[in-house]
Length: 620
Ligand code: ACM
Ligand code: ZN
Image 1 (tube, rainbow, N blue to C red):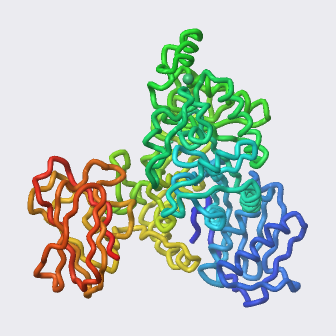
Image 2 (image 1 turned 30 degrees about the vertical axis):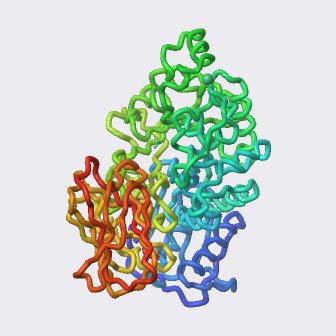
Image 3 (image 1 turned 90 degrees about the horizontal axis):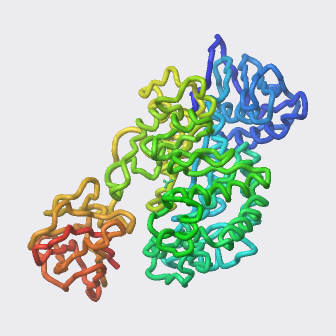
């Protein structure tokens, strides 16, 4: 069983049996010595198979120019030998990843011939390092998994409204100001030094993964503008208020580069110089998505420039902006890629169109542009795979079965233009993905995605894929991956296994349990405004001592849906409740002085006009 499924596997009679401890790798030529060494390490780390370097020829690597394609490989498993052939290093490496998967299932492998090569050359995972920050070790561990499933591109989203994550030596405030957030959210603060970035680039390269860095222009730039506000249209300091994930976003509306200031472009160019020095990638992503309308036309200089250039829309001005940045990237011998919101003004020379929402893959290739498809409906891994996750209105669900329906060549792409579809990307935006949610969001959906961009489209069979996913689960767990169940649903885990009940009907999957799950990123949300006397009750498995109860109502998505007036009650037996204090607004706290209690109840004291979100109830 291999994920992604190889192009062709032909079984033959007989089996290869690995003699414990005797495996050695014989690179007939030294060309694949590095890949062979990686295999040796992976077999030890992932399969518990230690190999001696003693003489032997159980696995033979051979360069063979007739295996066409730099990522293609051939594996022939005979009774006494495994022969790996490829024409290029990447192909030899992918053969090793297939072998690791086979040996993970046991030391006996049926005789077979595998002939394999990818359907697409762009097989990417996009990681948002900004909304939540991942450590160097975390990124490396994930790169290992990408390699195991033959993804070859990490699109790294390194700048955002909420944070700036790349050290830029010329502009130290980018990280001094732009990488810090709420100290209570350790995985929301941080940045990568240039040394760390180089280390990660090298680690990825060893695994045949190219890292495409993304520096967003002209919008999604609040963190950068908070550091250098002179680059905005208004040019005035941006107050950094509040704490947490949304620190900057209340000012998001005006925190974009002023298009009329030459300094904006000098700044972007200087940043890109350092970025291109760190990342050897041919492709540099320059953002381009979701610029709020109405800022540039309010700026006297930007609007004068629009008039002078005959631009009727801000979108035309944005196109001009992207052209300028693209030209700079081209002048450095690289090419740009952008989340292309519209094709109305054409596409800058050589730029790769990145479609995530608008469905213009077919249109772009008809115009002759290269395209990467990351249609959110099939590939946005931040969309919950289970009910019970917090879902803002813009966010859909993404059950694993639907990922399997993804085809980068979307409807309407003419057969003779299919080559312009470079491939696909699955994306992990991290507004709602803390470190401990990461694995379940990514695995196994990323593995299914990998199959849609590597394997032939013909012969997809969901029950068979689901079987392979289930078979991989114990191994993935053993490697420390908290793998989501590929089928079925999962209840929300509450703190202390408490039972949470309410008289209010929950809205969609904003279940009552989300009010007591230890996470501020999911909340309970009532479908309708609550009435006087409505309650939410938390009952513990056994009595506990508690000195303080804190109640946070409203939520990131529904900051106005707070509690108007309420009463906090406790119970020593779960049946008789008495009042211990009042609660109202975004945050309330009740001191108990170490009372033993079995249950906590929040009672709504008035008919509310608005709905009620309970972000979290904290018991200390
Ligand atoms: C995006 O999801 N805004 C590219
Ligand atoms: Zn301006």
